[in-house]
Amino acid sequence: MEILVCVKRVPDTSENEIEINSDGSDIERDDLVYSVNEWDNYAVEEAIQIRDNVGGSVTVVTVGDEEDEEVLRREMAMGADNGILISDDAFEGSDGKGIASILKAEIEKGKYDLIMTGAQADAGAGQVGGMLAAMMDLPYASLVNSIDIIDDKKIKAGREVEGGNQEMNEIDLPCVLSIQTGINEPRYVGIRGIRKVASVEIPVHGASDLGIDASSVGENGAKVKRLDYYLPDLGEGAEMLEGSTDEIVEKMIELLKSKGGIK
Image (spheres, rainbow, N blue to C red):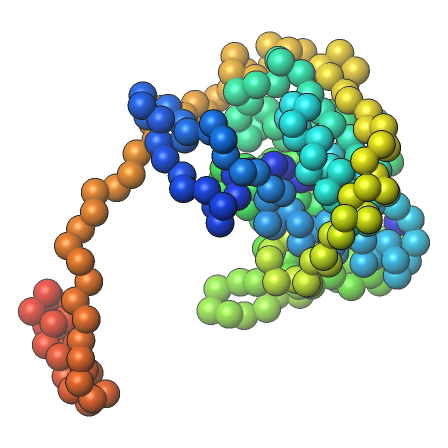
């Protein structure tokens, strides 16, 4: 099975204190520590496990610049077979649709049975996977937290839905899946694996390589534009309730009544 996983390099929130820049147009990116998007990491692990079980190969792809190559090498050290960097100045400022159209052009250059994205990657919008599937007219499932391979033409995918319920779907291949965290436990990447892929050549594809009209992507082609970043005003501090369980419950009821939450 030929599997493509779309990955993204993002600021590591556990290693950084995120601040808004002076004009409110973005976060301060100088000196940030970056890592692969958490949801994408689960998608790559799932792809590797599927390949190990049924054969085939795993390719990881990202849209970015030369610094984004590090996440491709990290996922290749994890076990992915190939990496592709999609990079062009024309792509800067692309919105979700632009990114999806860039990925579509790359995917159409190959022949993939299964395409995966993280459930959350594109600045938290969670839109690229669905847009990509729609553009390619492929079956799609989001928030996938289990995958079973039926045969070379069908899979069974479990989805996390409201109320903690699980929805099971039989899906024809090829298809696009957005992977939820918790589907597996991503493996540890050791220094030996990183060294092994350090000198592997990673192809770089630009707009001309993919046959993309530069005016249809990037800032000029974006239909959604970011206007502002801001931190919400802080409210008053939380009120800590003390006492026995019964006393706390009684106080909580009184508070809810006083705030109009219950009558």
